[in-house]
Image (spheres, protein in one colour):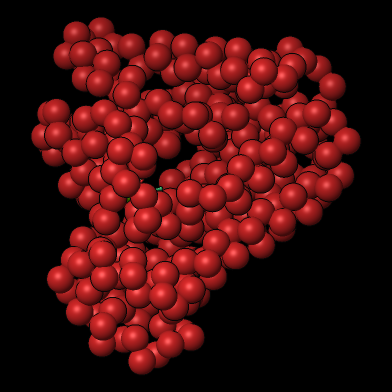
Length: 319
Ligand code: FPP
Ligand code: MG
């Protein structure tokens, strides 16, 4: 990103990264050592980017306030906590091309580190002294956990409905992404309608993001994905292309069941390609991106709103 907005964003994200690092600092060397493992978990910082861009798209000042930095740090900390716990649930060894905390330090350490991150997030949030933010984010973390619980409840449920699938991915992924956009709007002093629109934007890209993540799990090579693939099949998770395939071709049920029972990713992939179900899921991603772009039409006359649109459009690029 070499545009003015891109340079601004990457500079501000560095500040958010430093704030997070400082906030996690402990008087105990042991805690600092374990937090050091987290450097490999830092990705593109999508959620803090959404806080910063949403904030800047609704107001004039280029000088990021302390509250905005902290809120961006809070959503990143919550996200990190979910990744560390998710890798325990998935028994994953690799994330972003590096070793996971659970593989380096075992499940007990990873569970405790995830708890430390979540607790640090809410401690940092409390320093903003805006109870509405605490309430919003407390609701989001409840929703994230509920999403994971419902997903576990439906493990190996080949009849998972489309409605239940969308509810799960809303809860486990889109809810935090949507909240990140809304928080930017709230701290930027936007009116209720704009905050609502930012929430719809975040919800749509968050849903598209998870559908794409689910497609990557089926289609991509481990090296390209930077994490193990085929995990959804191994963990008995039904995802969008398989649900759409069954909806259109109920006769595929026995073969799908056999592929899932045998963790046969190659057969699953072939079935989904042969029935054009991958294409159907990609079509849903494009529809969600269009909905996202439409929802923030009023913010697209400034370059920060345009950057939100660019982020959304990246999701419709091929895997
Ligand atoms: C990734 O999905 C998982 C999430 C986005 C949410 C994980 C949430 C928890 C584990 C609940 C714990 C919550 C808190 C607040 C600590 P995925 O497994 O489909 O994606 P992946 O490919 O990145 O593993
Ligand atoms: Mg996972």
